Image 1 (cartoon, each protein chain N blue to C red):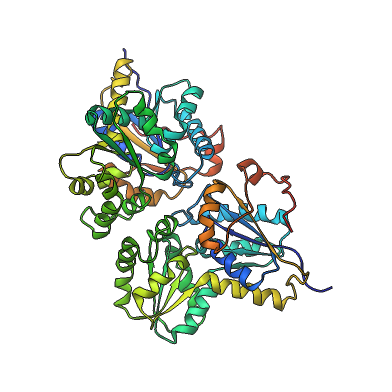
Image 2: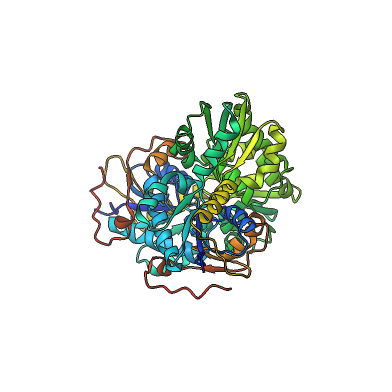
Length: 283
Length: 283
């Protein structure tokens, strides 16, 4: 039998990566997904490259205990900063969110300028601009850190909340003056603001959800390598977090668009121990 | 010679504790202060009690290498959650920010209701309410988490910024309906919003800065124990951070009201190693 029934490992600094999982599950409903959210050390967006890279390696070491066929870095900050390093260190494919989002943005921009909105660290890394340069698009790239978007999403403010609206206007107005053809949502929290952003920028600007593009890239890659899970039956989502599983469950539903059922807290000792044996994940 | 020339250890999850240091230096200009900001793991406000307590113990272990005469927990979240535990474990006095702020609020409220604004974890801990109960004040205590205030301060938004104003109105309007006599700024970032909050609530409501009260408490305690530094000459501030010293310097000036000069990054290995020998701090 061809195919590969092993799980897909996914990680994020916290809860945002569940928007990528949502897209993965929509496309690949029978895959087993093991997710790690580093909620004890979230957010990564204000941390140094060295620290983010160390955290990412530690998480991949943890995820590898589940024998994944692929690791998805469902965190823009970690993708921007640590992806090359992880690819070099790991014997399985590692897919980030920056590259697929950058590619799609260039395709849609057709030479118009491209605006990237993301966390401080992602913007400082210049990763989107560098990824776009490969395609020689000629599109000017504008970048803007939007530090209030993550807490606004985590607070559960709705798209029509006046604070949500005024913060969006505050960050995006200077970008609109530069007439972008595309705006890249360069943080996995931002899809929850997509409706409100679309309303503000109007119908002529494409919004690229880099998590959605990443999920499409995962499908393509697994298919090309004949590594999709061909066993029948529904897939599963097993989540591990380094802190506060209750908050993860409560907030997670909005990100996943589905209740987050199976969440286990991993202590620091379990996280760093190389002998920790997770219980078998649910079928 | 009486007095105690040893340093005062101060810590916070990040940069906010510098508002407490500012008040300490104003009152005790010739003390030596060693500060630790846990910028690799900031913020604590959304983390569990167990994790916050573990982090706090690790930091106190680090600070004790400098032989402090006292440790100031300049972080409301850590004070709310871990203070009792630290007091029990350490052979030197440990002073937090919650207790002094709670006491001052009760004094000023004179039976009117008291509003506490703070991070999610501080509010969830109910620490301010519990601390106020000791004084049998009869004041009703209202509590409200304000998760956007920290990123607004760190972004450097000014008191007259429209976003600052509308977020303050959004959080405080429901509290104003309950006619509080006092509002406690229960997070060390919030003093940077004090002007804007005062403008919104008007002159009839007392604002209690718990960091300021904490500094007053430190002076009182050292004086009572004849442990003030009686050596002549100016004091010093030596800062250690677990990540991103550059960002700490850049942002720190606004919190300290003075340039933050002496900042050293401590690697995770140095932080957890019990043999790390810091260079002697500047005179």
